[in-house]
Length: 114
Image (tube, rainbow, N blue to C red):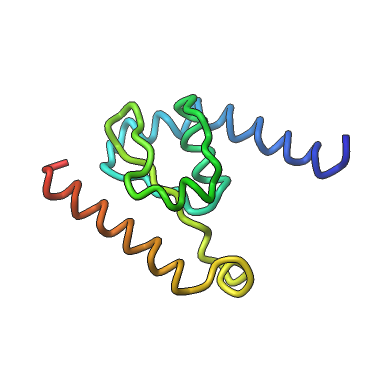
């Protein structure tokens, strides 16, 4: 196993155990209508906390309706808005569309009274 694979495995184990122990409890306590996973690791941590299957991240970002969590919240995936993604991986126009999708979901939840 390479050093990168060991590191990735360690990070995944930490996020899985912390997710079940803390992240799930926090989401249940706060009871948000929408949970935004800012980047692949954050989005994956939210889904793992609830033991939900992980879609391909690029597909999750394009999913207009997001992923329903057992709490009733909707989890949305967006690429991290750091300089690296903005300059190399995710053009600003695409990131703006991602955040418009988040805004539309928040508005839809607000109108439903969530």
